[in-house]
Amino acid sequence: MAAQDQATLVISDFKRLIRELNKIEPELVRQMKRDLKEIAEIPRAAVRSEIPQRPPLRGMKRVLSPVGKTWNTRRNARTVTIKTKSPRRAVGFGTKGAGIVSLVISSPATIIADMAGRGNMKSSIDGRRTDWYVYPNAKGTTDNTRPGYRRHRVNKQGYRMVEALGGSPSRFVYPAVEEVMPRTADRVSETIAEFTRVIEREING
Image (cartoon, rainbow, N blue to C red; front, side, top):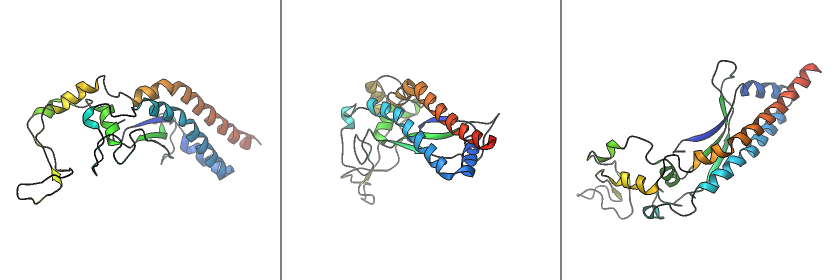
């Protein structure tokens, strides 16, 4: 998953379920979310196991830089965060599902290694220059008005990195999630069904 990419478990009508559980007892909603978060540990563990502990390329070796785009700089490369959320609007038949559990990869280096090569590579050799970015000991502009920053001409370096990484994006995250998704989805369905039965019992007395 790239910078903001997420592997998301999708359940329709989730908002309505929360509303009905809140009518019975708000603690039920909190319990359901705890249960879903516990289930999300299944894909989280799978993803973490696939992310290399060491940098997959020599050029990704840890460098102390505030931009944090090398392995284990600022953020551990294997950090995977679970986030739960409630959709803003109720969804039902004929509408899109609501993402309720997300896995978020926060390390820029991991995202680059996982998803490099996904976009159009042609623009990477057109001779343009990158935006200014922080780099240790950079001299900046010739008149030294931007010390600590540098930019460089775009070349075939991106192609070489993708070739060295091998495979195709996603290399770690999505394959790991897909492997455990059937089991995870079954657990989510069971949990949703369990709390749905709570509502039905309340309605039917």
